Image (cartoon, rainbow, N blue to C red):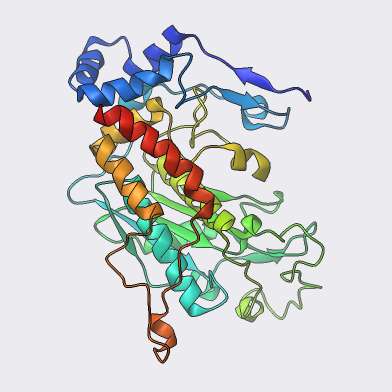
Length: 363
């Protein structure tokens, strides 16, 4: 299949997926702010400029290769296993594993950008950073991938490590790393893995660097001098991709998609949406940063935010309005206080889209 295929649902199907036919859920929908309803109703306007159908580009795309039952709002709402934040468990924790940037300053700034993005996206929850740890601290298995010659760490072992470290007030703990992951010996790699029951996830941004697949990638290991499987020194000074705007965009997408799963949102098959599954990088890049109205209603039901306030927070993040940090730093200041500008060029188009949504919400 070389020609693109559009997955188009009828207006009635989309209306039911969003609002449901269950009288209780219909009246719950009707109690929402009328402006929020007006935005979400765009889901079933065929000519909507805000939300469009999913396009499949090849047989290897997720929907074609992983048939799964779609999840509408009603199924999400009545899922008995779904975890919801509570006043006691109200924080998302981010744990970095290994260095994320080429210097400590870059690592620290980058994780702050991700923290700020998650705070805006999951508006109303607190996002906290755990002290960074080295790969050796996790005691995970590792290997050199036969195809790419890059180091990989075992995702399942890291999930166990995160589960042990989970703070009392955590809704979930997500680990992030620049080292490639594998879920089991027979698998080539995995972008990320989560355990919904334990509320933990681990995601790697290794393959989001622009040179991961090229032959001169500096993270290649000629051969693993196996002194012992507990010798983690091979990870010291291991190559780290440059943090570009595209890498920031991809990591924000992956992080929010995977935390979405921990909230009980399954892969979206309704409209072009962040929660669509992706099999490969090209497909992940085509996914938008935003949730379709059906997934937005799911997340709003779980957290309870005002849609307009959440969108405003996302615009503030893109505009780089953090806690009033001054941009200019004196020449003689210590390296620690360097203020790296956030590379948000790749988010500009999305910002324009959010502003269109805000216009609908402020009519």
